[in-house]
Length: 378
Image 1 (tube, helix red, strand yellow):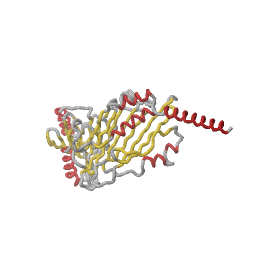
Image 2: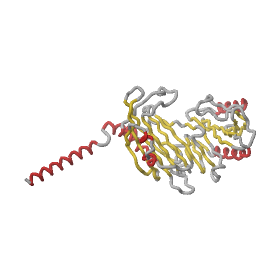
Image 3: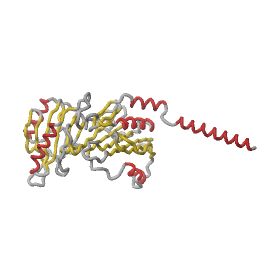
Image 4: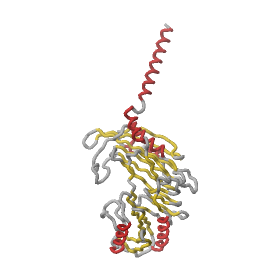
């Protein structure tokens, strides 16, 4: 009897091992999913943002735009409360001849109005539309002092916007900074001029150049603060949007990504939302400590159809080393994003994620692992 029981026990153990092996073999992406992952992540293109490089699928499109208040650069060796916050505005998809740029600048100088295709209320409409003062610096650079509509600076407490508009190989760029008192206007103008003098086009065939990439621009030199965000989308994956930001000498975070994710006050825990966690943990990115979180949401859309949404987040913090130019990194990837691209056929549409869980994980890992310091950038 005893040998029989032992044989049955061995048989059960063997069957359990076979079942476990079968389940392990079933884990991971299917053949179809592996093909999709390979299609997206093989032979990716390299993009420069900040002082870093990252690889993205060739079907990703970089918007290569900048709006004021979405980026800023602070001069080095100045108290951050006194340093002018210099910002960039450009749209690299809109090329312009030098002659057209000069005509636009003459229009601003003659009409005393800021030249913009936007209307009041549009996102990005200039806060200071009245030209109070203008100066032609060169054939391709013009300095303006702008004020808000309906008033002029009359006291030391009122601010004015200084804007240096310049043309660089077909790209019209506006660099601006606010002078919060009349006494600070000369200092702000001088820093703005030095800032613009440091800017040239980034040459991707010569990546080993010191400086900070902002869209197609390379900002040479060192700054006590550097902040810029890049945005990506895809015609092939219309429900996708990816944002990445680099902040040098940022103010720091009040809590970590995992602390917020595990908090009882996390909205995912407060509200009854159908979700599952696909990825959560710590990792190393570009030689720095980071944390990642990936979540899949499920639920009906407005018409009651099944909808899946994937949201992935990465937060990386640089070491607290004096004088470092390493950056805080914030990366987010969303599939199943809603109401994208104002004015396009996708505006107002609801999407379910165009990738499966395994495909999103494969895409995410390939992008995150590619983030690296740009040689020579520091």
